[in-house]
Image (cartoon, rainbow, N blue to C red; front, top):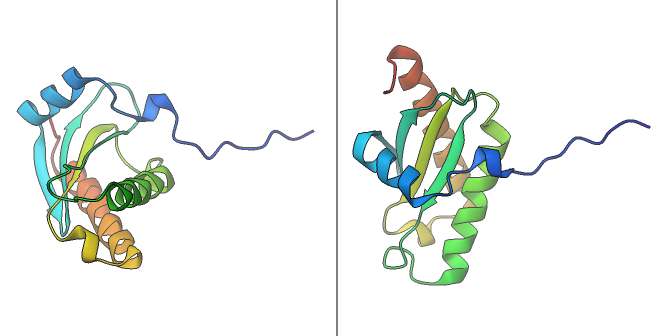
Length: 125
């Protein structure tokens, strides 16, 4: 029987420790694609990893924060094979809750393209 591929975002693809976030904030490069921001830094793991930082004061309702998180996670899961080996923290700017899901997906696609093109031109340390 053929093995069914897994389409989950496993723990090896996520930033989980506070120290990892702190190091990325201190030494990462900031990029943006409205309404998202990203902080990126090269890693030695050979694969891209995702962290999210969505403040309750930026997106007040938990339902809306979770919706944005799901969209970010799904978009990353679909694109992570094409991304260079980076640690990425994605955040949002205020007003994101008023944007449609389709527009958010487009913005995330622009963000992944920007990250890829920026990292190809220069080495993100």
